[in-house]
Figure 1 (cartoon, one colour):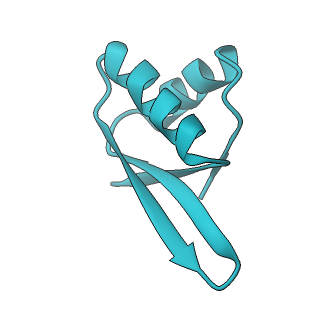
Figure 2: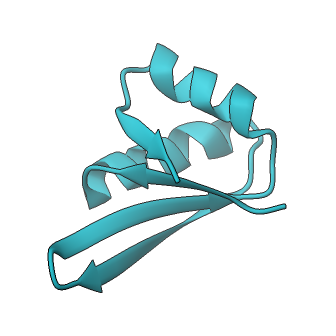
Length: 65
């Protein structure tokens, strides 16, 4: 199953990707443009609960989609 996490900016998305990669998780970042502007998403098939905990512990604000 693929999980999606929405982040506030490309900076937060890249920071999250770098942090999670350093912990051994595989994820990719994608920018999606719509009529309301841009959204930034992190996609993964790894353990989403552990990844979210790591993001929270490091002050990265996100929303699971």
